[in-house]
Length: 421
Ligand SMILES: Cc1cc2nc3c(=O)[nH]c(=O)nc-3n(C[C@H](O)[C@H](O)[C@H](O)COP(=O)(O)OP(=O)(O)OC[C@H]3O[C@@H](n4cnc5c(N)ncnc54)[C@H](O)[C@@H]3O)c2cc1C
Image 1 (cartoon, rainbow, N blue to C red):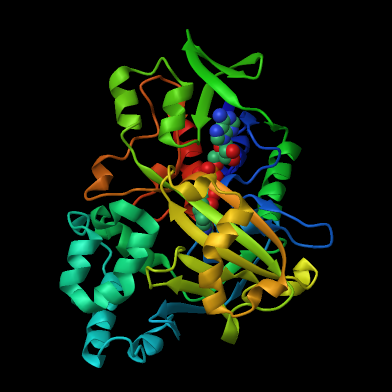
Image 2 (image 1 turned 135 degrees about the vertical axis):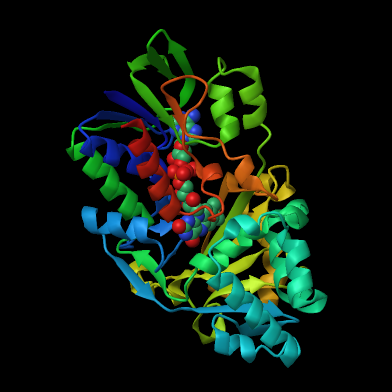
């Protein structure tokens, strides 16, 4: 069969590679000039590794992407960087059971209770039982209002904005279950990984059209017509890896009820600022700093070069200032100078005088970065098959209860390919 794939992110590329192994012809359409999707990177002239526009790492439990990395020959390096939280203007390392017991922002008895709740969530396998609760309600009861309000409520608020009270406990469970203190990063960066995967697809005879925006998908008789630019091509099957709302827009002949369903899914966007610096920003080699103080207008500060050696970036220190925001938030419309002005007083508090070390600033937007997963979300997940036979949907709105990520994108791509075959 000749199978088209819309999107050369991790889902699309993995689906393509898996289909080729079954002897199918694959053509991938990608609107950007390079592969990678949300894990896309960029590279300055003197850097030998690429850098993600949005901070990325994997966990030791991410088996699908680790297996793929061996197949395509891009190894992951695992390290144990320091993850901390900012609470009442103090940076507190909080990334192991021992650190939790030493976490003096809450009374000792609450730390023990929190540890017991985390151990319970890590131990249980049946997430289906949990999804009838919201993380907000259940965690408040399980660990107590004050500890929840100190640590997790600010993070849920920062990640999900006005939806924070609605998020399924199963989503929270999945983060505790799958996350490890050891973090992995592909040699050369995630861009190098996706480029190597794209090259592998090309070498096996697959075609990838970059700069190619799919504007229409139509089912006519037994074939599927894909329109990109002024061209229309015919395929036997199509896999669409873009978010539900976009799929609805490009496929107008889907039944009205199904389109209504597709457009009812909600998501939140991301705005990431990247600072290139000539000096370190965070003390004590902190890689990840969660902002538990909601006065700060961002979710996290991530010092990439406290995880990956700065030598790969010509000695430059790399800092992300990350934010999840709804698409209509004013930060989406600000240029990098205005956004840095907004962030400046808070960055100055974290590192007085940092601005004299800033060499370059970048700003990156992702309008759809994180699905909103509410109570009993498993009942809403759409199957790969759509009402138009031969057109399949595989995107990050289907990986629940797992949090979206490159590992689950790889797994999703392989699963949808398996279903078609
Ligand atoms: C801020 C942020 C931090 C993250 N951190 C991590 C992390 O630490 N670890 C991790 O593993 N994951 C992380 N992720 C998630 C990870 O990047 C995604 O889950 C994964 O890349 C999704 O892959 P995908 O292929 O399903 O979707 P996408 O990457 O969204 O791919 C869809 C592709 O379709 C293309 N496309 C869209 N419309 C069209 C069209 N009309 N025509 C043609 N092409 C089109 C897009 O350009 C894109 O390339 C993060 C994401 C964000 C935003």
